Image 1: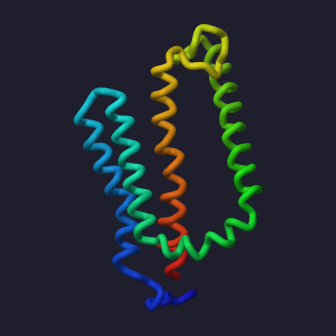
Image 2: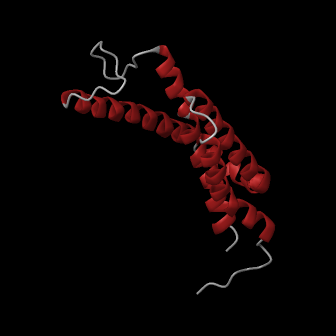
Image 3: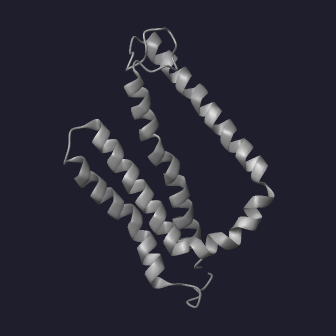
Length: 153
């Protein structure tokens, strides 16, 4: 078994990074009880996600700076994969909505027959706003788990 190298471990940063997910879940759950307005809940989610990412960057920004040259070598391939993944996700959403439509379950879908459309501009804007947190979460997770947990051993 590999021994832990205590010279590479910063206990304060590791504990701080490990506390990001549970603290954000507790604070998020509490904030959601303060309002019934969906827009306020979306704003709370976005703010929590930005704070999580900012704290993780503050803790491990120096490590990311050293990894940037490695990432930059394949940036066009990585961007193409990200864009392709987003397009594939859009197709999957359309297929799921088609299946829901066939089952007679039209949850907020436009009556135009377009399974990728929203019923109103408000729903589309709300969906876009709600998508920001899931887009920021993988970056925060990568920083926490790669650099806080794997980097220290």
